[in-house]
Length: 287
Image: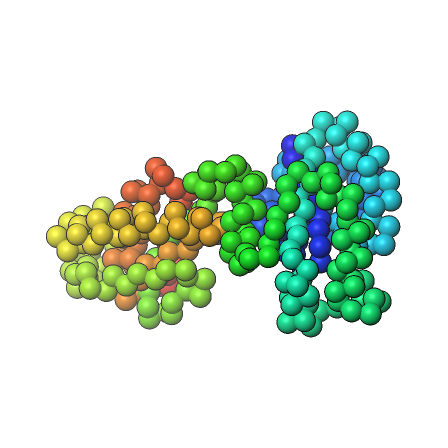
């Protein structure tokens, strides 16, 4: 099981990397005294590592963060875990700019200037940099690019190997657009089963409604175009490091058309994507 040390220069992206690993299911511990790792294993921490993997952020915020770290790392390796060190770095002038822009205090703020603090931090981190499994240079990276870089190194160089969950949800515009939506699709242009007395009590999960909605020529054309559109977009989002994508499909009440379309999209995407569905407003419409 993987045991990752996240370290590097302050302001270089360690917090972003920690959030990425947490989203991927890692048990993340920030600013953990490395000398306590043996106790962590003794108290059952090894069971956590075995289940999900652990990532520990260690840096100069703890003045004794390097004390005995090599011996502790040997203990981790001897226990049979895959120890990796992710080291994050950036050019000095970029680090100074980031601290000046955010007005954050540098952990070594006792120095006369941020530049002097960065220089001292480099000296303190030399040992960890020398044993790093990989060094991330974040000087020219956006937050999204950094996330994608961490995921590529976590799962391999193949961008398409980065996992992402696609969440399809139906909703009714009369109840508001879901705030968590990444993409919103309006299907109120489709013929409405609500005006057919025999279909009104049913929902888009029922075969008669699905047959009516999906059997419309305009809907068949719409699904072909939408599958092609999502087939292009999903890999682009994946390369940007997104771990999930929420696609919300809306009709008037969220009961017939949007439900049927979400079910149809799920059926055509599930072979190539990890897809979940949610019909937000079915209960509201059922009363």
